[in-house]
Length: 202
Image 1: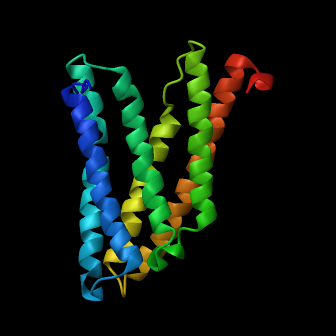
Image 2 (image 1 turned 60 degrees about the horizontal axis):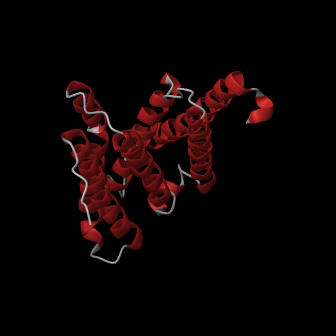
Image 3 (image 1 turned 45 degrees about the vertical axis):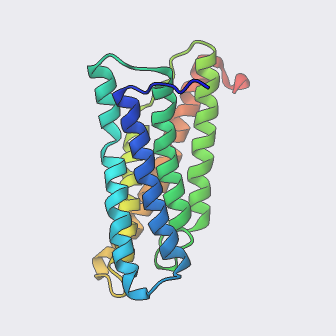
């Protein structure tokens, strides 16, 4: 069996996925709470570290691919895939951890998942028709705000049992901003697609 040779940019993408998996492992430990509770904050800080490492390196693989002129079909698929795995998986975990369910409700996660499935489906169809359908600026801003909200909520867990009051209010603001931007950016993609194909074709 042939093993594909990954260029540097694609290797960075795979490393980002591994970092995300480690973050998920710590979130799972927090969720299950099957270890000494005094280690819970430590696990949250470690989850925070690996989440930041995975998200902060998001632009690195794209930069390397453009710098080295090594943009590949694998990279075009894998990079946004890893982004969505990181965001959606973290949101699912956080929506089931008692410390953060006050801010992040399951229906909010459903909204994010629905938007991602919808946009991916539209993008796949448009590009199959030979129409360039790259990310909009609103989508990039949405990704940044989502990442900030997730990192913030993991920090809420890490500062238990008594996070400052301003963290409480800012958590609500970040989560609701994420939901609004998610809906707004998804709507922009639908409008953009309809302008190309007409509403009857979507």
